[in-house]
Length: 260
Image 1 (tube, rainbow, N blue to C red):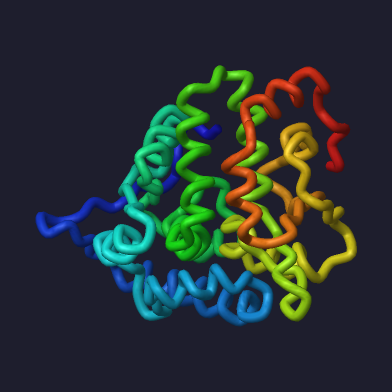
Image 2 (cartoon, helix red, strand yellow):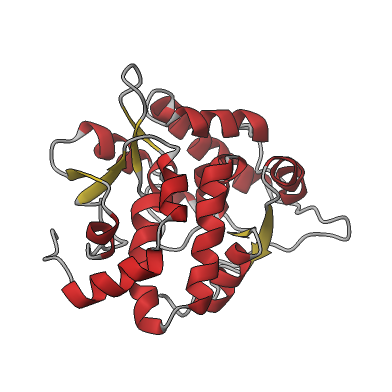
């Protein structure tokens, strides 16, 4: 994890609203319009449903209270304003309390294609639509609770579950729909959206919890491997499984050889 950020999160006024400059709304618009052209037939139906519920638009960065109003009504979640970087303890604590962290800054135009630290476009556009879905919201909450209780070594393995589902998960979305994206790290990235479904380079594997927990990843490259759940409701089965027992088993077996 980076120890310093080149960005500073913006603070709200007394009414809880943030006055973003026009230049930052413009960046949001560029990112939003670019992503909408590629996710239209690549994102899973549950994501599109959440996008409609949140009412996100291209013309401006959404205000967090607007998102909270929808999330509270659908799944009891809210969005927590955070600095550019937070500790792992704080991250797990927020998720366990059904609060999704969002740093209130947006990337510069010279970093449109890749930003190592998550900005408000990644968190809101990539993740918040699916937080209106009970199965996705439950997985995220349970992950936070497990992370709080886990040891440092266990957290390393748990991180792979989050990475391969919440961030970079794929779903076989019915016979007529085909393979779709639900991971926010893909959905907020133009290049990864195209690469994840259209390229013949990455390995696409059926989801297996032990396999996921043993698979290394890097944050600064297009992913070499993606895991596919057979249907979106399968997230509920993951939540109901003994994830920490799987972590202990994966720790005994050790890591797979990296594909990078």
